[in-house]
Image (cartoon, rainbow, N blue to C red; front, side, top):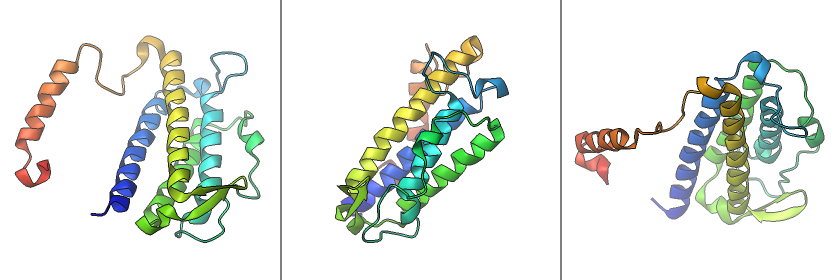
Length: 190
């Protein structure tokens, strides 16, 4: 496997993990929690989902079918400012937007090939390599998903269900991972 293939595969796998993390937080929200903020001027889960979906569709929609010369990652019809306004959408509608955005981003990753990573595209008229554009969005999307986790965890309080190794559970988790790794056939342990 060449480095570009490895990069695209690893990025997709890691971003699917970030998506699952966000979904784990969002599914713990009650209907009234979607539009709550933690402080004046803060973003609600609804606003974060609207923004993530809008950004993913704008940045990656034109690349769903593969790289094309002259692509601008700021879609002409995008209204970024509206993404930060409460739209009153239900949790179900917001989860649908979430899925649409992630589907667009992941489909674009799937359509890219290693040679595309050194090609260029623009985002708001600023030139990037495709690799740099991916890295820019990996950081951006991860940051917002961790905001969602913090928001949901704070809103759920003592009812929060952890999305990672629970406090005090590291030794048991490590032991379980050791057993799983030992049970794998040698060819999958490389």
